[in-house]
Image (cartoon, rainbow, N blue to C red; front, side, top):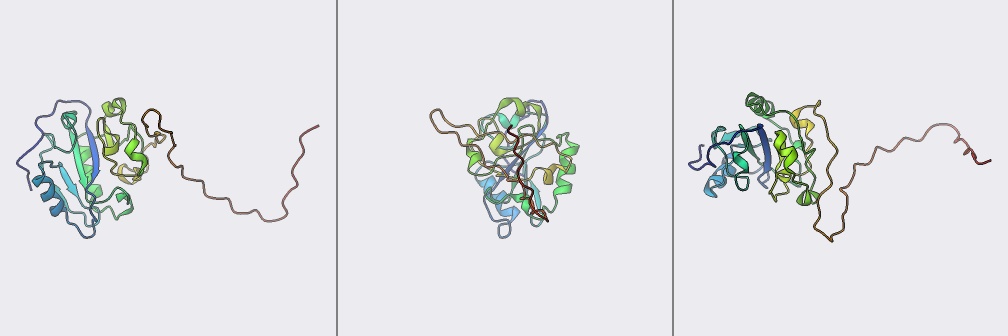
Amino acid sequence: MPAKLDGGPLKGGAPRAVWFTSENDPRVVSTRSVAQDLIREKRPAHLVWNPFDGDILQLVAVTLAARLLPGDLGREGRVCVQIMVVGQHREPFTNSPLKGLSELMSWLDSWGVARRWPAGPPLQVPQSYQAARERRPWARGGHFGCSQVPEGTGPDPGGIDIRKITGPETPVAEIPRPRFPPGQAMVPPPRRLPRPLEPASGPVPEPVNTRS
């Protein structure tokens, strides 16, 4: 389903892929329906993918820019693949069956997109609204959530499990703290608590007094 409108020629640089969510239920909304909406809105992605049924449609040639990113960001890179996932940012799509992912990743590999996330794992909502959107990691190329794109404002794709996308060997950088406007209290993103230890069997030892 090719779109008649694209974002123009690419400028060159590190290859990258950017992940978006359409904010639809992938169990009831088809890939074709989301693709038609994007074309009608004149903001086509390169690919639209439904991780529940594995359906993938290409709207824009990978050698041209798509139109989901602000300004000229979509033209940066030898490729800058914009992927619209049929899903919702509050329900990470990595919890779905991820049908068709291996074919999609092999295709991205063939275009030189490195299996890394220079900005770390995308933050979950609502922290992702205030995520750092820095130029330095963007310049390295690799994979990014929409919430990590410089000059972007979207919260998607939410707190996805990046290792389910780029493989179990993907290095996981420290999750960056969100940025807050001056004067606003900084609240760190919630941390995943460690699994509680099971109680030890037998008598509990008395505490040792180390004071002399």
